[in-house]
Length: 552
Image (cartoon, rainbow, N blue to C red; front, side, top):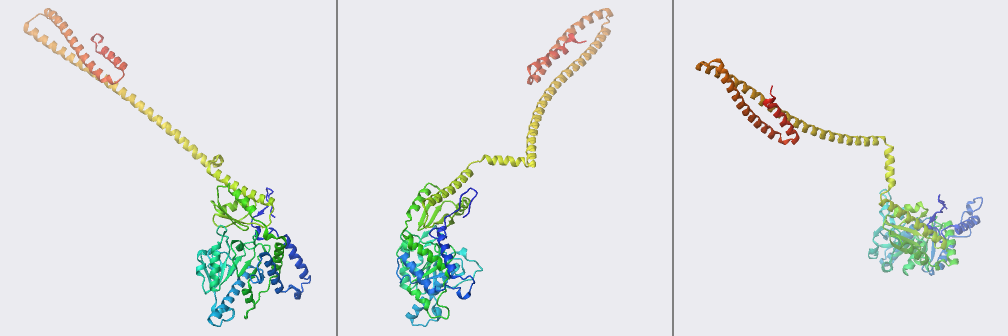
């Protein structure tokens, strides 16, 4: 038993494949007792056999044990062949069914069949999706592409059809129909009673042997030993058994009816009987004896299935529950491999039964405490999955802290962030410089306009001074001419001239004032776009400059 750090022990939800109790305790005692009785200490080759226990005695003994637990007669279970592997069981089933098929054809058409029915060898009809082992023959019989490799040897004579159309494909060319009552890869779904009835009727019509494969399906209990008996009262010509009988060691038995059992003695160049695998016979005998003594086939099964259904009803991720005997298929809305991965973390061993189905095959004998522990462990799996999905759906502060920690550990990332921050600051400075530049441009334009206004005023003053000088010069020349013409004396001239000049100057001053006022008005218009205080100041300065009283 595996122990986990949390202190939990491993729970094997597939232990039903080992034995009805899930352990090999009574099996170990049985095989040890047989070995001590039959294996000599000196390894004498003459005694390395079953001793007084011949192969016939083992086959008869196992058949009798099996009839006790199934309630069938010797016609349905005539003999049981123990083998060390299910591959051997499958090969012998094919050989015996082909012998029977050849003998039946020889009687009907009068042809002489060669040994082992070579003249009219029959085909083997199987279901698509079936699983019949990992040996060479088992892989060919299985209707699964993932069990075949391109380099694998091809065994002729196998046909694969869907289960729904299997009965319609049975004809006289078929020697054997190989069928598993439960599809372990399709949600643990069982063959229906109607399908079993149709297949059995078609086999009877064409003389075909029906072989039911239980190598992966343990006995069930609840009033039945075989799972197919719980579905319908179908008669099988042969049954391959392994799971739950031989301690999980790989061996099993092949139960034959009277017709197929008779083919063991058919004349052939090859050996007509299969030497029994004694250790496997010992293990199967010990298990069947417990079934008979403990009346395990009468043990009820509904209790755990009901408790499991009640627990699963609380889970939103569960779609359905499929139950057949001790096999359970839990259909989910998440991948089965994901659920299986979380189950492994908490010490729960399960299998997948499809893309979205988890499979379990429980022991027949399990107490209430073990059932509760199993259900609680399944709840832990669901809780951890739901907690993981909840954390994944919401933003996590841990993720932000992890990002910050990564940034602190990465100086290059920090330098990039600082550079970006400096770029932002520089961009702000550039914007501020642009604003200051605009403001300075506005001031420059205002100063330029003021300078232009002052320049216009200076030009007006200079023009006025030039005109005044020209007028004075003209006035002097005119006075001299008048003096010469009139012959006036110099004193009279001075008096008249003084009076005239005074009058002229007053008139000119008046005209000048009017011109200056007009120019000032023009300047005021030009400066109207500026502030009122600046305009008034400039007007006062202009008046002060152009006033004759202030002239030097």
